[in-house]
Length: 273
Ligand SMILES: NC(=O)c1ccc[n+]([C@@H]2O[C@H](COP(=O)([O-])OP(=O)(O)OC[C@H]3O[C@@H](n4cnc5c(N)ncnc54)[C@H](OP(=O)(O)O)[C@@H]3O)[C@@H](O)[C@H]2O)c1
Image 1 (cartoon, protein in one colour):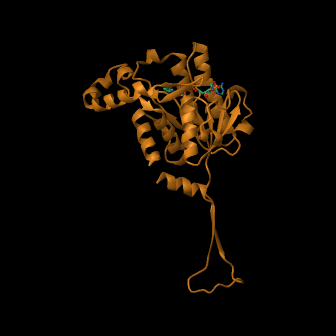
Image 2: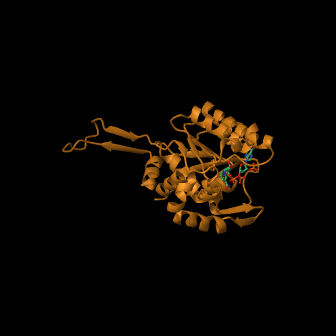
Image 3: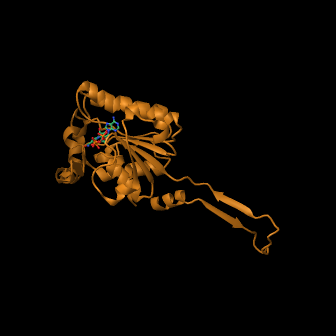
């Protein structure tokens, strides 16, 4: 179904009709029907990163035009899908947004990370706030943010720059894009992370853990009310599921708001069909 929706969005059809029984008469005025369906073009902030590159790859597979912005530009690996992406090298704090965002139908931000307090507030919070404001200013209809699950932690433990930055970015998305903004809150994301030409197979741990937690879900559910329990119990998410949840958000205009780990997996399943 999703493929058909994308195909419909990619097609710009012009048809001519004549009423039945009416002979072809070139002097009569034909009815022109123009199906003005938009094509999708996404800008992935951090498309060269672990999650960003999975999003770029999934979008290319679905026929969506992709631009990535990151300081390092095009990654070194030579997978064929990477040739289909427009790789821009630039810092989100100094971006020429009019060039980056031209023609985009959605911005997807994977900006975020760890460091000292100041650095975490800056990359998780300020960088995303700047991006949301720029997207809004340039009339981009949709903004999708990769945020993070709160692990059911008590609020006094959510005061680090990482979480406060994430929540600041989330409120910016939801206030500037109340009816189209998307916030995905995954926990641990597994897959093959490429670092300096090497692959770190996070799936060796992530995949079995995801299966194990899902098989004992009925027993562990009552524990989820305990503060911090999700540090152990939150299900890991495959990086491709995060990517396909993003694709679902790009093509389905009824998909907006904040999405939990389980909802990310459901959205991914419907986009993969
Ligand atoms: N990995 C996980 O398990 C996990 C779990 C939950 C949530 N998340 C969230 O998911 C998001 C993506 O995580 P990830 O693991 O994919 O991180 P990552 O591999 O470090 O990717 C971050 C991307 O952002 C780019 N970037 C950083 N600073 C930038 C700047 N100033 N201007 C432009 N681009 C910049 C990086 O490229 P350059 O360095 O070349 O600029 C890179 O492409 C983050 O927000 C993270 O908090 C991750």
